[in-house]
Length: 102
Image 1: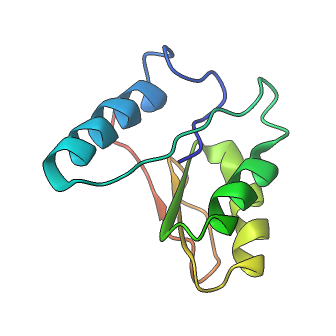
Image 2 (image 1 turned 135 degrees about the horizontal axis):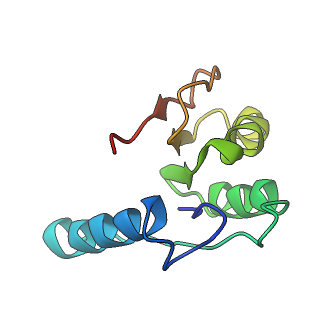
C-alpha cells in the first residue's frame, strides 16, 4: 500500500488505512507492506512500481493524486490488481477506484 502525501499522523485516510490493515493482518494473517511517498507525491509511480514488481497480489494507493501513477504502472503489470482509494475516476480495467465516506 502506498499512503497518500502527508503520511501517517494525518488524521485522515492514511491513519484509517493503517488501522484497518493492521486489523486485517491480525484477523486474516495478511502481510501488508506500506510505504509513504515524499511530500510532493512525485515518487508515487516508483513506489507503486516497486510493490507491483514484488509480485504483490494487490497494490493499493491512497489519495486522488495517486491515480495517474497507478494507471501508468497498471499498464506495465496487467495481471496485478490495483485499487485507488479516495478517487472515483480510474479507467484502467485492473484499477478500480473507491471513495471513502467521511
